[in-house]
Amino acid sequence: SSPDESEPKPIAPEESVVTWQKKRDTPWALEQSYPAGKDGKPLMSINWLLNDEPLALQDDLALSVLSDLMLGTSVAPLYKKLRESGLGESVMASGVSTTLQQATFSVGMKGIKDKETVAEIETLIHASLKELAETGFDSTAVEASLNSLEFRLREFNTGGFPRGLSYMLGSMSEWLYDRDPLEAMRFEKPLAELRARLAKGEPVFEELIERFIINNGHRVTVTSLPDTALEGKNLAREEAELAAVREKLSEDEIAALVEETQALKQRQQAEDPPEKLATIPSLSIDDLDTKIRTVPIAVGEESGVKVLRHDLATNGIVYADFGLDMRVVPADLLPLVPLFCRCLTQMGTTTRNDEELSKYIRTHTGGVGASVSTMSKYGAPNVVPEPEIISHLFVRGKATYAKSGELFEVVGDLLANTNFDNKAKFKQMVLETKVGMEGAVAAAGNSFASGRIGARYSVEEWVSAKMQGIDTIKEMTDLAAEIDSDWDAVLARLERLRDLLVDRRNLIVNLSAEGKGLDAVQGRLEEYIQGMPLRTEDVKLQDWKAEMCKLEGAGEGFIVPTQVN
Image (cartoon, rainbow, N blue to C red; front, side, top):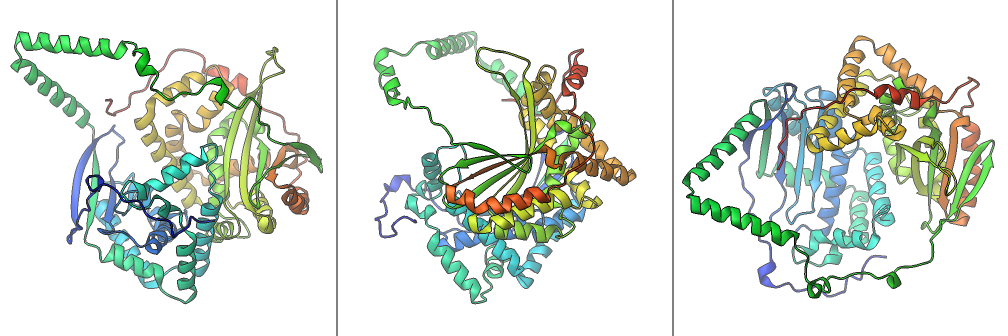
């Protein structure tokens, strides 16, 4: 239930109030450089400040839906136009953000061919927004977006993150600005009012685009251009500044700085006195729950498929995980697995195109996604045998009990019938992966180095490195070229992956729901398993450890143009 709207609102001290920035009437542009290697490319974004006074609750909620409608999925109209334009390698779809006092809207592209192309992208964005304001959105897309939002708000699934802490952080968008912290959690009334307005035929989202974006002069276009010499220039400038400061210091001032630095280090390393340590809140063993918490599990079998069931309080939602044993995948196909996962939910199937599939999933379920899990399974306590590698590609979904049939049906459809034969879209996925990896290396190069080291000694790390390690950047570059030169060969590898993975012999199913929910989905589960392809090909588990051992040899290193503070 939503918080009581009659509760008093807190009164904040005046000195804590964050002042509003008055919106400007005229757009402007900024151009800047960023340190890059020889393969660096321009990127750009257009950014709007949406409000200079508090948003109405309904506008706040409606803007979130609008952002999702325009950019929230790979088939959303604005996202799709940019993605398919060929003007850049990846869409920057930040969309609407309401976490600060003043909301913003941002959209742009990375991996742009050259500086001149930036103007084409800007023109395309403005033209697309104007078109959406004039034509509006398909009613099924609106319903899918609303359903997805409502499911997420009602479920409030925080995963392993503490729920109470999540509520506190969720309230910050109001609380930090001296507004009622519970306001951010009251969604039922504005959502009902939004649905009512849409039911009357009001052009809610078209009006929002006009008011907050098209007719909004507070807009800045930011273009970032690669500069291979910038890192050296910055270093030289910093060294010159330090030298200039050093030149002005007397010997006594230098000695004083050294003394202050040594004093600071001693203070930082010194133990705090007991009376100060005692002021720090702490837990004792008596504060901890000594009772081990266990998750109920019932292991069964349906038509030769292992099924795990968990009778848990899930508020009328069934959580279903469909695991496919990935150990049948040879080393040369592992780099394709993350792309294969994306294809399952973004390419469409032989029965539904990409837009129809996205709308169906978002209308009838709480979401369907694919991911990979690889881990080592050890033996009984005090026994350390050679660990067994457990690796699965999981398709995970959730739905209300009443919609469990739709969930099982759509998962079966995308696993068995995904249409991989979309050369342009698959190439765009490859380019997006490459751009994303390049950004990740610049931001966290140490993790890639660590993963590369681990890949020499751990099969888990080796599998991860094959799919998303430092080599992935070059592999994606080569794959993009191969798509142009020999698409049939790439398509054949994707089809081969499906043949290896989508096999009833590889399947394990994990279900979580209340007992009545598990009973309710039983018939759907049986239908799903019977509809799963049962291959007759003799498929063996791959010797990944032997492949891992090929990495042993001389040390390696890689250089990344990035700033280290």
